[in-house]
Image (cartoon, rainbow, N blue to C red; front, top):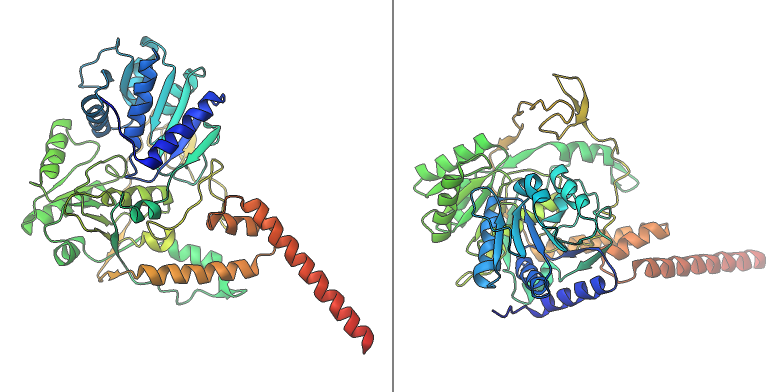
Length: 476
């Protein structure tokens, strides 16, 4: 079967082939959620198989294995083997769809691949991922993701030599490849008591205020008010809150189900299939559907999971942006107010293998915890002690839910306000580094050159003004 790519996908595919022909052994392709990364993967793997090469497509969830088999095997007609628990395997096939968890246990028993494609490659820092990556230095590694940085903002330059950027979310919406959206969010944060320093908010006080995890309004009430009858995904902050939310939806006559990573695979598949058919209108979850959940019919996303991670925020809102027949626009109800921290879903963003610039007002020290069994110190995010294997008891996330109504965000006004802030920063920028950052945010192709030119012009203007003052002073 001939694979048909969209024009921007063809360009990304051609750019990737050119880099590999030029000797690149690892590259990353960035394309927003819903931009169609899997169909590009299908063409890469089909091309590799036609030349007698072996290729692996590595994914990290059962749902993604099933979706990949449908796209690569049924739609693209590629003969496949599957390396995942509960699926029949065929190691003799040149192309394998692999669950990371299963592959970590079996990869040494399999013929070596010449090409490995990593879905949602921002997870590569995880031990199971990175161990497989390191085991095949002679293979070409291609990473695919909408958000090419780890959840803490760290870049992926450790794994990839080059990065190719696709169209932006705004471009994809403009061209009809993604759906327009309406965004509802809490009103602006109450900044009463936050002092100003040098014309801007005190960073320490502002940071302390934003650290408070507050969810505004009730998702069920807002669903009935703005999204009645729509298929919606609700992102909750804990398993308990997700189960309770599904119960409340069902009690209100809205068919709903909770699913999480521990849900029995048969029950989880049944719930997802029922949602796709429309028998279920709502799925509640905790981070399970933030990545790779490809259901274009999702019309609404409800965010009740506060996060400081830009990547997680964009992955979640992106679930609702895929177009579908009869779907005019997506609805996003951001009860956690994440858009106030991270911006609009289609804001211009600059991605880099170096990651985001760190806020110097925040500590660079990573949070830690101590194992109560062996007393070793490990990262605070650890679920299991890396030294003794002790499983840490789950601590319930402290989230305060308060009454309130979300207001529709005036996207044009938000963009105008953002431009005013940008112009203010531009006027205050005093170094080439600060100007370069502004150039990156504006999407300039060569922000370094632009920054140096502006800085040079400012120095010349300042020297001219000082000379003028000196002449005028000599005349007095």
